[in-house]
Image (cartoon, rainbow over all chains, first blue to last red; front, side, top):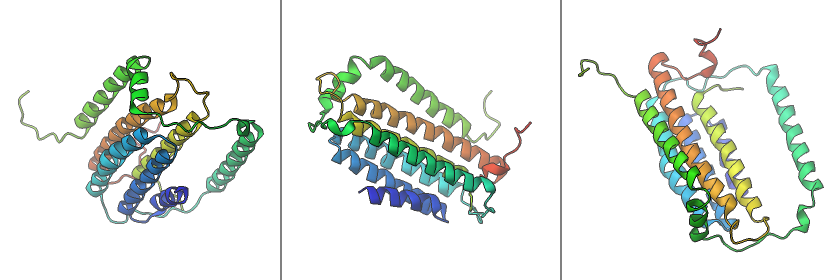
Length: 159
Length: 83
């Protein structure tokens, strides 16, 4: 499953055509959702599918088709920063790997019970209730902002 | 070969957010079991997904506006705000 996830992520970022990139993104997000299932988090997995595959991927596909143009995959000569970026990425991966291996994480045993939606609901509705309300405000504000940005001004309307 | 497409930047951001979410869910299993913190990581991830959806909506709106203004979404050529 990890192979599917990482593979479609690479396809998504390296595809010449942006539509294939968007489809690869949807495939990779679906792979992450199945990983959530395997990690005993079915509620999060269903939420991920509903929000990402259902909403975000469709939104991205619409935008890709809206802004489609010829010669979109312009090729730029690789700069010297590319090599530096690759070296930095490998260094970070190595550092994190050694840091994780140095901890005594293997002495702990993972709990395998599945957190039900009742547990999540208890947490959300008690301790995290302010977070939920602020998040709702942020979501509403961002959607209104997005609508206002992409509005087509036809002019001649009532002032 | 570097591509400076604005939508590809959005894809990359989504992948990074998903990687972080995966870590939250995975390490949630290593928390000492308590009734109260059983689903702590999963709750954080639910909030994070909602936030990522809001962020994606705003970025897509900006991309549409940029395309309408400039007929191009190559971010390496957006230099209007450069000092």
